[in-house]
Length: 384
Image (cartoon, rainbow, N blue to C red; front, top):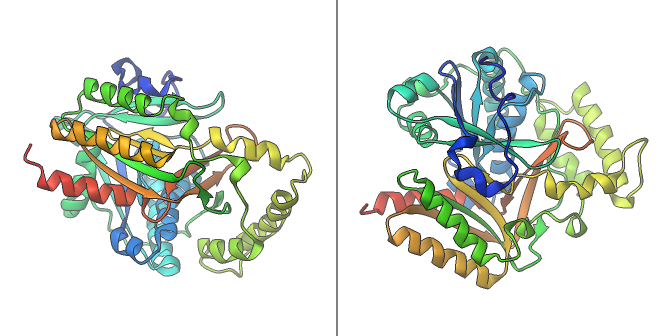
C-alpha cells in the first residue's frame, strides 16, 4: 500500500479544485518529506546567478527521479529547491544521490545545497496535516499537489533544527550525481504582455475559503483565463547554441572527459540542429515536442502555498498586487511577488513523447526565491 499510494490516487483536472478536500488523502506515516534548498540563494541571486540557483534546485528532483529508475513520485519545485515525498523503499537511494548532488553543486557551481528529511509520522504527531493530491495537466502527465501545514513546518524544522533533521552525511564517496535528463537549453522566454511575475500566497490559517476567494479574485484579474497567461509559448522561444549548451551542461558531470558527458554532447549537437532548422530526426518531431511545452510545465502549483508564474500586462501586475494587499491587510494571507522581463525553463526529459518530459518554470532574476524573501519579511513583521 505504501509504495503504490501516490499512483493509486485519483487525479483531478481543474486546477481551481485544489481547494477541495476530497482530492487529498493523508500521506502514510512511514513516508518522509525531503526538503532541499540552495544555501545563500539570496546572495547568489544578488550576484546575478539565479540560473545556477534554479538549475541546482531543479537538479534535486532530477537525481531523485534517476535514483529510483524514473518512477513517478510526488514533488513540488520551489525555485531554489524542492519538496519531495518518498516512501521508505526509495528513501535511501534518493538520499545517496542528493548527497552526491550536494558535492557536485559545491564543486561545479560553487553553491551549497541543504538537504533535510522529516518523517511524516513526526509531523502528524506534532499536529500537522500532510495530505497529497494529484492534478492532471495532460492525459499522460500529472503533478502532485500538497495540502496541510506539515510542508511549511518541515521546511522550518530542516532550516532551524538542523541537528535533528538536516542530512549531513559526507557526500560523494558512494556515487556520482546522475543528472541524466536534466537540461536548460531554451533561451529565457521574453514576456509577450510585458512582465513575467512569480507569486507566492500562503493562507495564514490554511483556510479553504481563503484560497477559494483568492483564486476567484485572480480569475477576475485574468478574465480570459489563467491558462492564457502561461509564459511558455513555443512560437516565442529560441534554442541555445552548441557553445551555450556545452558551457552549461559540462558542469552536470564531475569531469567532461567521461562517457556520459560524451553522449550528452552528441545529444546537444543533434538537438541544436533539430530545433534550429525544425527538421525531424528519426522519429522525433521537434515541432511537435515544442508545441507540447506549454502543457508540460508547472507554471502553477500548490504545496500548501499557492505558486504561479504568469505572463501579465503591467496593469494586471498592479491589479494582482492590490488584490494580494487586500487579502493581506485583512489578515488572511502572506504573499511575495517578483517580476522580470523573462521566464526561465529548466527541463527534465525522460523521453520525447507526450507525458515523458516536464519543465520547471520561473521568473528570471529571482523568481520564486525572491518572492519567498518578501513573503518571509512580511511574516516576520506581521502583527497577526
